[in-house]
Image 1 (cartoon, helix red, strand yellow):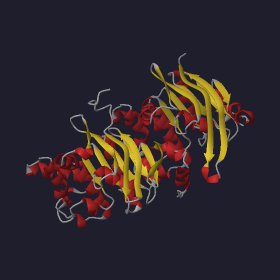
Image 2 (tube, one colour):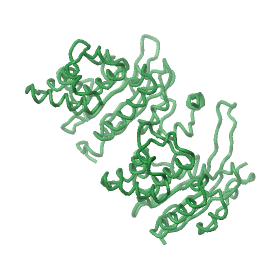
Image 3 (cartoon, rainbow over the protein chains, first blue to last red):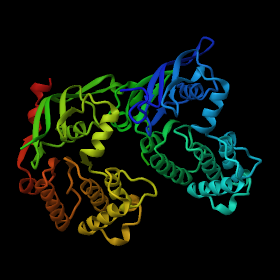
Image 4 (cartoon, one colour):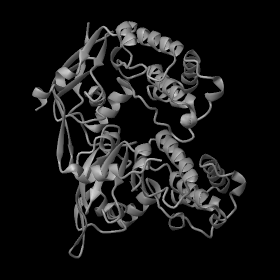
Amino acid sequence: MVEGDMKHGPLLRVNRLTKFYGARTGCRDVSFELWPGEVLAIVGESGSGKTTLLSCLWGDLMPTAGSIEYRMRDGRMRDVMRLSEAERRLLMRTDWGFVRQNPADGLRMNVSAGANVGERLMAVGARHYGNIRSEASDWLGRVEIATDRIDDMPRQFSGGMRQRLQIARNLVTGPRLVFMDEPTGGLDVSVQARLLDLLRGLVADLSIAVVIVTHDLAVARLLSHRMLVMRGGVVVEEGLTDQVLDDPQAEYSQLLVSSILQA
Amino acid sequence: MQERLRISGLDKTFTLHLQGGTVIPVMKDANLSVSEGECVALAGPSGAGKSSLLRMIYANYRANAGEILIREQDTMTNIVTADPRKIIELRRSTIGYVSQFLRVIPRVSAIDIVAEPAVVQGRAGDDARDAARALLARLNLPERLWALPPATFSGGEQQRVNIARGFLSSYDLLLLDEPTASLDAANRRVVMDMIGEKKAAGVAIVAIFHDEEVRDAIADRVVDVTDFTDAERVA
């Protein structure tokens, strides 16, 4: 199989990624591949290393060791940490997205909803105001925000609407890879259900690859194909999501699964 | 008749780490072969491992040893060792699994739950939804429920949604876990007819029936799983 075979090769290849904070382990020897359209959940409790891993992938943290390779749009695998600053910025503005737990961290709170979405389009070269506005309006509709709210500021939105706006801002450039950090985190349960359903539909329709960090196993079950269970910075189990949840092998996975409250 | 499923030397134990590492033997050296158009019923008392065997064929449970070969056109794939992407592909194209309970998804209507696997297999959305309506009507699910998410449905209504979902798509191998358990006599009859039609279309079926009358009417063979689990063999 040739490296340039887009459909049949991994999009992201992480090899023995390790991050130490001084003597303390953030994450150690984490390896996985992610293929186009595949959703990978990383589960574990606070301190398991899942957020450290995500920060290393996104480039907020510099790994101590290991490699992160990504298949660029030209089909070639590139070492993300060796990209030039300009290449890396372009990648993060166009082909990658990051949906953060707190929408205020992923949005610009003092510009309008339409501008929040349009801004990412302009980063990929869109200049025509009318086109940008109509594309932004279309995306607000897709995330179920009434288009007459296009000129409102995100701070006038509810938590659930802000999160949906953040999703639109990320997806408008047609990214192939989106990272999500507890995207349903601080939301009410009814709002969570709506957001999950929306995410599920968008990810499947657009065939986006996703790495989603969550401590909520129900969210992982609904959205992901595969799962990594982390504890103390290392991966203790991995497999198909339903396999790991229904027939967990590692002691820690069994503890996680058996700790879910039945509603 | 072409063989669709071949299980050989299959072992399964559960190791309960939270109970001091207690090992529960489930199955030892299980062997089974199912051909196209054949329905094999799994029998044995509750807890004998019937559902576990179905789940292993679907790769929902892992096996400790042995092979589960599943035919996909001209090749047999061992799902025990297949990588996750291959398993997902087999579940989309080849293996259908009707579990006892429907896993509902918030906000998704009964029609869309039923149509989804067929759409994934490439059927056009409108066509799949029309077929879903026809199947739900055949299963006597009241029309007012079709557009609603099944979270609030009764057990029997959810089971019919689940059956419709498994039967609408075209799989070469169908796994049925007590498909008639919470149905009344009329709907049980409908499901029996539907299973008969799948067999006639060449689908290989492995099923657990709670009701012997249904089982004897449909199954070509009955396999007693206690043969795979008897104490001497698993010890």
